[in-house]
Amino acid sequence: MRPMLRAALELADAGWRVIPLNGKKPFILGWMQEATTDPATIRDWWTSNEYNVGAVIPDNHVVIDIDPHNGGSLEALEELAGVKMPPTMTIKSGRGDGSMHLHYLRPFPKTTKVRMPVGIDVLTSAQVVMPPSIHPDTGKPYRWGADVPVARLPIEVISLIRPKPYTPRRGRRAVNISGLISYVRRQPKGQRHDAYHWAVRRAVEQSAPERQIRKLIEAAEDLGFTPQEARRVVDSVRKASA
Image (cartoon, rainbow, N blue to C red; front, side, top):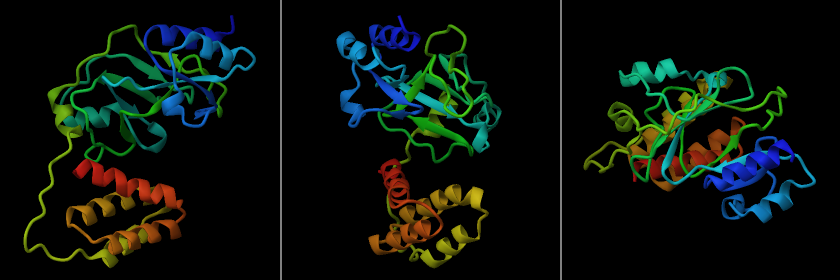
C-alpha cells in the first residue's frame, strides 16, 4: 500500500477527517465539507496519486503553530506566559527549521492570536498537513513528535488565547485612521503584516466606521496585500473582539 494512502486511512480510522493536498494546499474545492473518514472515498483519492495528507483540526483541538521562519519560537511563548508548555501531540514540519504544530485540548469555542508573540498562530477550524507528507520546498517529510497524548493548555496560555469582551467606551476620541495608515506604510516590508494587524485592532477597538476600515484595507492593498488577505485580517480581528 502507498505510504500516503496508508497514513490517510490510519488517520481516518482514528477519527481525523482527511483530504488530499497538492503540496500544502487542498487538492479539492470545498475541502472543509469534503474532508472525510470514509475509506472508500480515501482510497479513490489516493489510489492513483501520491498526494500529501491533510486533515481538518478536530473540534476538541486547538493548535499552537510555531513558525521560526517568521520569528516564532516556543521559548518566546513560554517567556510571555511565564510557564513551561507541557508535552503534547506534536507534528514537525518538513521545512526543517523547527516549525511545528502543538495540539492541545481546546478550552473554549472561540480563540484569538492577537496576544501571541510574533510568528505564533492559534488554529482551530483549519486544515493542517499531516505526516508523512513531503514539504514542497525542502522535499523532507513531516514527522510526528514524541508519542504522548493531547495535553491541556496551562491556564496562563488559556488567558492569552481567550478573546476579550469588547465594550465601546462613551466619549472616545475619533480614531486617527490617517495616523494608522502612515504607521503601516513606514514599516519595512517584512513587518507590514504585523503592523497592519496592529492597526486594524486599534481601529476596531475604537469603533472606527466602515469607511475608515475601508481606507485601511485600501492602504494594505497598495502595499501588496490581496483584497482577500486585507479583508481577512479585519474579519479575524472583529471575530476576536466579538
